[in-house]
Structure formats: C-alpha cells, structure tokens
Image (cartoon, rainbow, N blue to C red; front, side):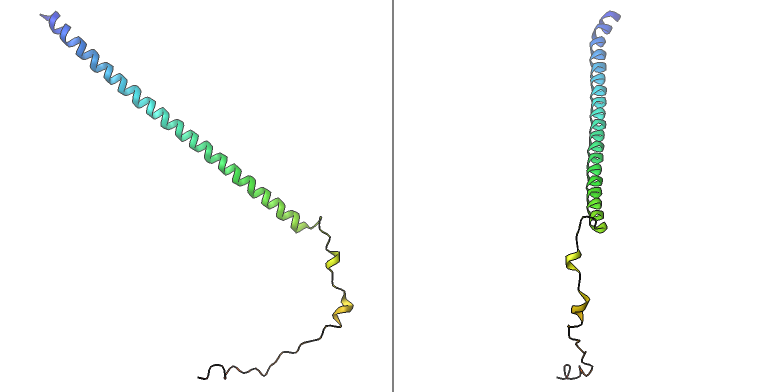
Amino acid sequence: MYKTIIAILMPIVLFSSMKNINELNKTNSDSNISKKLKVDKNITLEKSNIQKAILKEKKFAKEQKFYKGKDYNLSEHKVDKSILDKVPIIEPEYDFDMDDVYSD
C-alpha cells in the first residue's frame, strides 16, 4: 500500500519541484538580464557624459584660442589718432521736451 501511495505521489512531487526550480531559474535569469541592462545603461550614460565633457573641452580650447589672440593680426584695424581730429563733434540737444508727445 505504501508503495502505491509513494508511486502516485512521487511524480507529483518531482513535477512540482521541477516547476519550482524552473521558476527560480527564470527569476534568476530575469534578474541577471535586468542587472545586465542596468550595467549597459550605466555604460551608455558614462559614454554620453564623456562625450559631453569632450565637447565642452573642445569648446573651451576654441574660446581660449580666441581670447588669447596669438593667431590673430588685428593691426590693420587700429584707428589712426590723427583722423579722430577730423570727426565732427555732435552736441546733444538739451532742449528736447517730451510734454508735447503725451498731450492728447
């Protein structure tokens, strides 16, 4: 009698334990996949942050090149002070009255 009960229950127990093992493996593989996705996402974020930093450095280098002005010859744009004496002086009009503008 015990042999028949064991013979009937044994496949059920084995089947349920195999099912539990499969579920555990599936959840482990899902967690591994999610961990891998997180790692991949972090790597891509780090790469994008590095690219942004490189672009900032290039921009900074370009600006510094301009501000230092070593490569620019601006001598042709200098103003001759003798020509400034020929420019007429424009006197401001101090008698400007705004009262007429607002009268309706």
